[in-house]
Image (cartoon, rainbow, N blue to C red):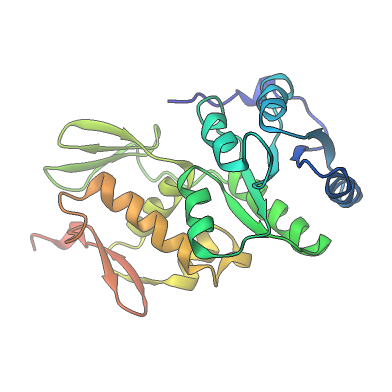
Length: 246
């Protein structure tokens, strides 16, 4: 498991953003607009430089192009996730769902399709950094759902049949929100706004993907879930475990 850098070791001041692209004009465009928003910007032009910059400078966010020579953004992201949990926004000229899902599966936090406006990029940057800063509420240390499943809120883990399984930050926030509303249907738009941010209320593919992630980690048979239930066309509902035996 990748350990996060303690907040006490991170420098104070403007948030540091690493921009990665093999096109200098694109880097200049992004740098100018981010600096106008008050961010500090460093650069990289390929995957190797990206990994080095992350190790040396511990950025708060990485904005990275997918289409780069030698090592593309997907491969760079795969290697990056071995050393860091830094939030990553991927940039690409491809806008199809398959590429978006591939990036998210590798650990990207968001996906922006070129061309994009400065306002759109700034909104996505704000949202991703806000999610990274959000500590989800922890009503108790360990919640026992049933004989098979428990949730350790302090460690962001689920305990399945006695085995501890780490949750990604977004997985944890999603599961936590579902549990807080156990027994109630939570609409798609509400989950997207609460977990990802208001700007993402129409991005249903994010929700489907992370529901699948959670089901693979906690369900005995993900195709026939017992904990996270689908209310078709409406949203998702976590089983009402508190009243299950009443």
